[in-house]
Every structure is written in structure tokens, then in C-alpha cells.
Length: 257
Ligand code: BTN
Image (cartoon, protein in one colour):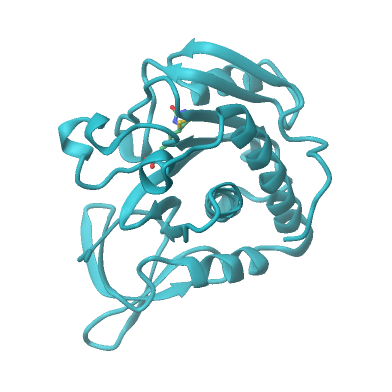
């Protein structure tokens, strides 16, 4: 993307906290109070950081924990497109702030660097009584400074940070500002032009494109070769029998290395 102006909506206001259980929970609390789209929560650390699929998100001081309230005029079925959009924005912000790295996206919304996960997105939707979207909290965690040996044992093989990959990391504030700007650009693009530009931004960066993958979805294990993203954000897999299947949500694994 070209140089965009400073964000006009996202991060207005930006609530900065030293410690919080989870910026997603805090942003949800504010959204339920009726705070406007763009309200964002940035914390120095989290005591109960949440990841996808009920997992915990390792949240020591020094990394980035940011959640933004969105109130998109989209049907709830389009909500998964928002987390893919955030993944593309996140990869772009990382590439801009850590020159020389090649961030890759892993469906549905992780960012990987050098074969390890550096960032993740947790998008949480709440609907109004009629069923329309009331708000979506887009929560983003980026490992800025944690050394590989500083992660809990179970993450040490798969997690990394910008500092570990590049020898330096932008400050949390600089990263948050840049991320809000890029996120606003992609959010506006999605609302104005639909999902196609996001899909086109995602596919060349996909870490599993053309590779055999397994996706655990609704208790089922689906295997196939990753064939890209469908116009609605679903993952397209070609099974060994040639059938093409769509996966809307799940946990994707592949043979790394
Ligand atoms: C994942 O990859 O599982 C998603 C991780 C999302 C973590 C971020 S950190 C800021 C926000 N607050 C949370 O509790 N979770 C998200």
C-alpha cells in the first residue's frame, strides 16, 4: 500500500493500560457500554491473554497486546473475513517495521517469520438481538522482544519474536501506531471493495500454499493440499481423491521444514 494518512478512526480513543486480564475482554466491556468503532485497548502485559480455540496467549511485558472495537456493516457470515483482513494488515505492518523479513500468513490468522509464529489474531463477534453484528473485537498479539528461550517449553519450538528474528524490535507504541494505520487501510478496503483485495493480499503470503495440510474442524480431520482462499474466506483444500472441499474454521497443521 502507499503512504496512508494517520488513522482517523481506529485507535480513537486509545486506552493504554499497564496490566489487564485480556485486552479483548476490556475492549468487549467498552463496546458493550456503547463505545464507538475504533476504540482500542493497548496493554503492557496481560494476566489472562486469550488465544484461538480456548488457548492461552503468552503475554509478558515487552510485547504488543492490542484490541480494536469494529462495528462493520456486514452480515455475521462475513465476520471470518475480518480476521483474515487483520492477518494481512499484521503481516504488512511487520514487513514495514522489520525490513528484510518476509512475514507469511497461516490460515486463518497467524503471522509466521522464519518458520515460527510471531503474531496472532483473535476476532470475537457479538450480535445484536436481531442477529446483526453489534461489534467485533479484533485482538492482536505480536511477540516483539521475547527471546526464543523465554517462551514456555511447549511454545519454544514454534514461537519467535521480532527481536529474535532480526536482532531488534520496534517499540510497542511505534508498532501499535503503524498497525492501527495499516489496519484502518485494510478495513476500509474490505468495506469499500469487498473481500477480493484481502484474498489477493493473502494468497501470495500463505505459508501453506500448495502444501499438504490437515485441518481439524468441528471434530473432523480434513486432509488435502492447500489451494488458496475462497471468495468468502474459506480455505480450499484438494483431497487426494481430487475432490475440492471448503473449510470455514479450524486449526491448520502442516509438515514444517
Ligand atoms: C492466536 O493466535 O491464538 C490468537 C492470539 C491473539 C492474542 C491477542 S493479544 C491481544 C488480544 N487479547 C487477548 O487476550 N488475545 C488477543
